[in-house]
Length: 118
Image (tube, rainbow, N blue to C red; front, side, top):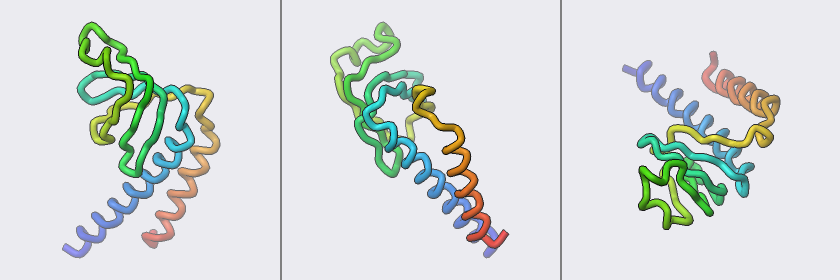
């Protein structure tokens, strides 16, 4: 039972650390145009206004990719999206530095390895 509790705590720590890594990344995208695909298949295009530590997203100047299917969204200009309903975030390729992301991920993995004693 102690092993299970320790494993859950370690897994929760990794999840929180990865969340913070993504949070930092998304903070750098504020002001950029993104497409957020929700779990209900709704895709919302807009300018990233803010993101919080739970990866909740606020978009401004939004438009919906399939306005025929979601006509009620035509009058909406700004929206708040709960992080748990996001399936994908499509971001411009020129905004991503793969080397920087890989380096940050490596550092995070090394820190986790040292903190767990593995």
